[in-house]
Length: 188
Image (cartoon, rainbow, N blue to C red; front, top):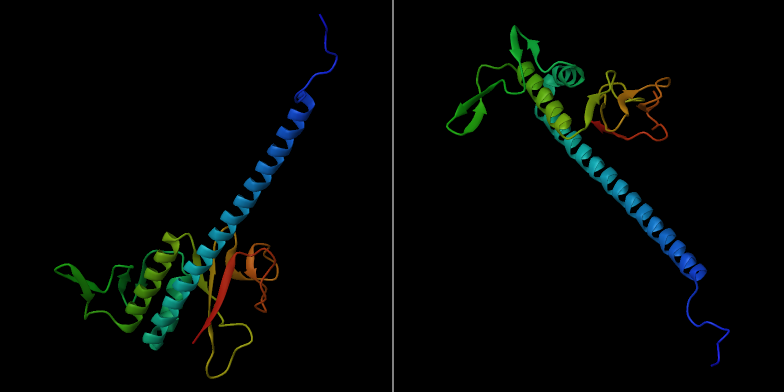
């Protein structure tokens, strides 16, 4: 009987190298998927914040006499604000007629503006977005038609313009900080 000295087939080393290459490819694909998910989440938050800020700008345009009350409500920390001896919440100034709420006649312009600000802030918070307005108007604007600045942020970015706060949305001059997750929108 004759014995063969050579073997035919694949050795263990070749199998291990192939598995290593496959593992690296799977890890690379997983990293790409995670990057795509993060980009999708970022675009969703940007879209939501723009929609919320546009709604706030439209609300300010419909009630220009109440802009100061609207701004105070958005920048406040409370869910209720006392305006003209009446406590205002996001559900104030409405009466329920059957199933559709309608505006109540007993609210002043400032009370309506406060309710609108509280409602916008509540909606933004429900969408994991912080919203505020720059107290002195937009940087670099003054005069007869001062522009109002909405600031919307998410993640760990704060709704402020500051040169010293590390997590602020932008510097005092309005330029975005590196890594900030926020939007600034001018409205008038």
